[in-house]
Image (cartoon, rainbow, N blue to C red; front, side, top):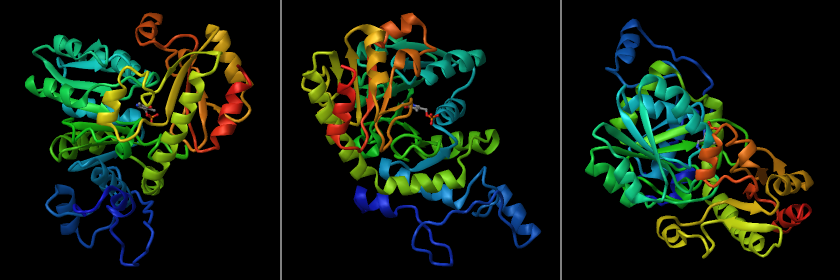
Length: 388
Ligand SMILES: *Cc1c(COP(=O)(O)O)cnc(C)c1O
C-alpha cells in the first residue's frame, strides 16, 4: 500500500484476510500452526518456505500490527514485543555486544535508565549520558567503540527535544546507529526514520493503544537490523507480543491520528491556562512560545503532543496537594490514555534515580506531569484548580 496516505494506512495497512473474508481484522490466539506433512514442517522451520509455525516467531495478528506500524513509521520492518521495555532490551541485545558503548540522553524514561545501569552494564555494555539538546555534548561523548545513540524526543517528563536530523548525522559520521524512542509523538506527529534515525522504538502501551488496556512495544527499522538482528532476540529470547494485545494495538492505530490531534489541542489549551495560574511556577510544553525549543518542535513535529508538565509552587507538598485534591484525573503513572492522568515523577516513575540525576534532568520535587486525555478541557482545568 506504498502510495497511500497516513490515515488510509492507519486503517487498512497490513490486513491479510483469511479465507472467511472477514471485514475486521481477525485474532489468531494460537501458539502453533499445523503442517500438511513432515516435509512442510521441516521447510517452515528451516525458513526455506514462508509460513507460520510458532507464535513466538510469527503470528498473523501480530504481523498485521507490525506491518501497519511499519507503514506508518515508513520503515521496512517492525517487530512487536511484550512491552516497551522489552522493545528497548531486544534492540540493545540485537545490535550490541560486550565491550560496546552507547551514548544516551540523560532525560529518558526512568526504567530505561535502570535497565541500562543495573542490567546491561553487567554485560559490559557501557553508557555515557548527555544533555538531550546539547549536540556538542553528544559529539564529545562518542568513543571508538560507540555503536548506538539513544534518545527520547520529546523527553519524559519535561518535554525537551533533540534535533533528530543533526543527531543522525553525528551518529552516522561515527558509524553508529541512532535509535529514537518515539513514544510521546507516535508516527502521527513525528517520523524519526524520515529524519535520519535508524531505529524507532515504541511503548505501544501508551498512545498506540490509547485506552490504557494492554502492555506492548515495537521496534521499526530496516529489514536487516530490525527484521533479522532484533527479530532474532524474539525468536530465541521470547519477548513476543500476545496476539490479543496485537489486535488491540492494531485497532488503536486506526484512531491514532484523530486521537493525537485531540490530545494536542487539549494539551495546548491546558498549558496556556497553567501559565496564568498563581500556584504554577513553570510550565513545560513544546507548543508554548516560551519553550526553548518551540521552533525545533514546529519543524520536526506536526503537533506538540499530549503531555504537559509543570512545577507547582511549594515543592513536594504543593505538588502532592494538587494530586490529592483531584477528583477526576487518575493518579497513575500511565500516559497516552483517553483518561487524563497525573503523576509526581520524583516519587514514582523517576523515584529510583539518584537525587543527582533527578537534579540534572530537572525532575524537581514540585514537578507534576499530566497526560492530557480526551475529557472536556474545562473539567480537567477545574480538577487541577481544586488543589491550587
Ligand atoms: C512507558 C514508556 C516506556 C516503557 O514501556 P512499557 O510498555 O511500560 O514497558 C519506554 N519509553 C517511554 C518513553 C515510555 O513512556
